[in-house]
Image 1 (spheres, one colour):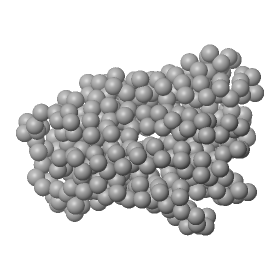
Image 2: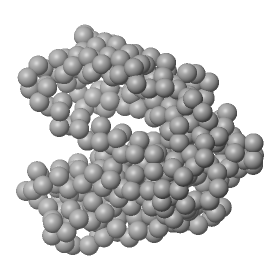
Image 3: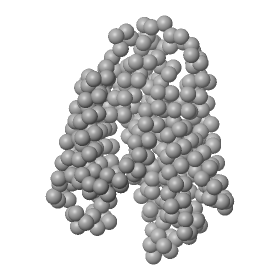
Length: 375
């Protein structure tokens, strides 16, 4: 803000320029994931991301800074889909829920580490130096990908005799035996991911902090830790729930269980008066149940034609990410309509009313999970 003489609205545009272009380029990114060499694509994205970080660090105007952020969104849009596509190539389909959960866990862990590492770098080298350090890391990462990542296995996983290692989900389905794409199931998976991810991105990512400030006045540091527990729970829950789905041989059962527990825990979180310790436990458990959003990727993978896996996973990922801007704005509009004197004038009851759409989203996820065909 001081470097470019920005106000709060300008900062909002600067930060949102990344997410806007990340969302816009999800489908093109998925297309690239299906049709390009995975290792080359990841290396290229990492190098371009490093270039964008350096560009941002030397920006001298708001326009230049926003453009660099926008290009960051473009060049990172294929990455998580490419990682999931690689997992589907190298491992039998029965392991995909666990692997998708692990990929999501590392993505969430990266988001959690940023606020821990970047402030120290900024304190030592300034924000420009911190971004240049990120650029150097991007180049190192690109080199590691070039050395260690292989795009395709030497033998197709469908040709390898599979050994049971505790994941009994029945026989593998070959690509030729897969039925045509079920668009209804794809739509339901997108809605399911939207419904559960909304809790993480809207409550954990923005409105949970002012709500807890009002709920526990004078406990600002503890409030930040409580909100962080939502992300920690999701990072643990994503691979754990994938492994449980793998163990049970039914992704849908775990999806229903998550969609039942998520609104229950969220209701306790916003309505039940309790101590901070108990609230922290509820936040952690709510994060775990909300981490079930990643199970939608497993269902989409199982119904996708092999040549369209990347683009359909990208559509699913984009639908989840939409939960952030849509629900954050909706909650903001409700709070603005309730209180006319800013956040300081809002009560706990005002926040509880504004969070009702999040509960409806989770109930939508439950209905969707029940309506999904057996997976």
